[in-house]
Length: 472
Image (cartoon, rainbow, N blue to C red):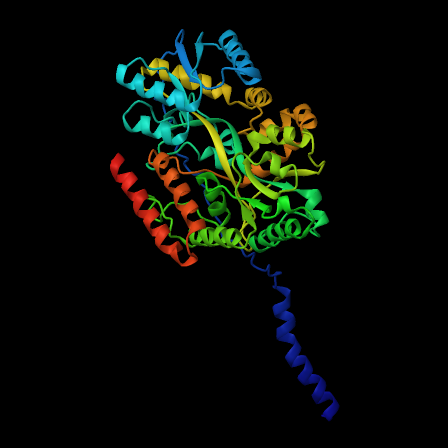
């Protein structure tokens, strides 16, 4: 057999089994891989536990029909008439039928005397106006109540947004050393610098000082200008009118970044860096002939270029306006500026708040008193009170309601820009005594060697501590 046939025979032998097997073959399906069942995770809604509703402390107190006696100090002029109109509106419109009876007590000192006598006799009002230190004194003998109980009450109190609407400086003004709110604000003014823009520009300054170094430079430049001119009568004037009152001292200490309170919050600190630099700055200005004193309020001196700066309350701006209208006054442009911050610090003004306290009487009368105060300090009514009294607003939103008044009183309106810089003097009963000691000490500073300053301030600290201990 040839090799060719042998090869073909071998091929057939190999193919036959394959062909025979192929006749019985069924198509083989690829196994379908089943996806494992995936269970959807059960997302449980977080259980939000509702905070229990805070019940009002006064839910069972009914103020309806109460008569509230309000002792105040604004009995005459536009201010008194404006107050009476506001009270008449409340009496006619409040939903509880509360009647407020205003009683003018004269000046603040007269009112304090009347209140002290009333505490002894028991014939008390329901609301009393007063400086915070006086209110704290009456609170310390249980004659006043802590107003925060009403401020934060869920039924009768203020919302967080309403509280945030108050200027911070005035909001803090009625709080005593223990954190009790002994007074609630309804108006404010501020201790500021009166500044002669026209004269400053002639002296080569583009605007008010922003640091203490610039303040000293401008103050001394004005004094030097008066010394160098042809008028010998104004020698020794020109710079800053210096009166060593506690409000003026506090304004500088605020601008130096301090508040006269020690770190523990239970006493005063007049040996702080801020107090020391204030005393040294005052001494340097006085000793350098850049500061001088006047026998009375320095309105005429400021209106005749005998002072580039004076320290004064915004509430007294009408008297300064009158001084510029007097015969012989120089028609300069002037205005309010804050006390400049100590090198790089924030400026400051000393905020004077007009506060009222709620007298401890009955739950019904106290709630009625608070409802009047809350209404009296609402933005709309606060704006009415500002127009009547010429104080500055306590609430930011009230400014938007004073457009016409601002347009008619542009100088007064400058004070609004300074309200965010407000700081308040201590609201402690001891401050009545301590503030007199502050004035006495700084008057002594001006007349003593500079190296005596630390000892004088240490003595002031000791005197302040004694005042606290006497009241305790």
